[in-house]
Length: 143
Image (tube, rainbow, N blue to C red):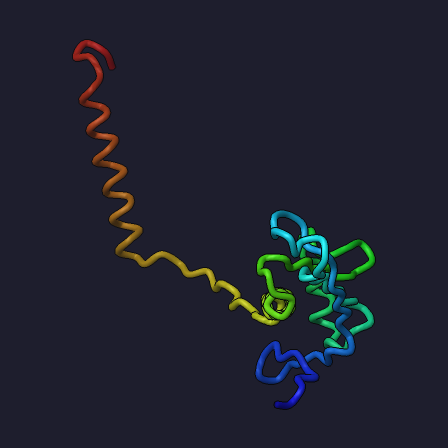
């Protein structure tokens, strides 16, 4: 079995695992007799500015309004969903991957279109029909 040294974000973007700091800490909450003995939760820290990410991805990450990103530009993820340290490590890395992947997707800019001639005529006709309908609602003697 070979050891993974890179975190794959997309087909052409990877991050070396040396840039990601992973600490095992004791998990909160219920866990039976193991809770005070085994460090199963994972604290993941990733410094955006010191990373090898392209500059435009760094800028997009820094602009994200996410509580997991500190004011210094460090992504902090705590994973304690599972009772296994290995699963929590995978979970933390997957959450980091998804956060970085979210800034790599560029949305197409919307090109505004003009209404067709037929739709303009239809809109004006419906307005006149509505106006006529409302005029019939008035009292007979009023004008």
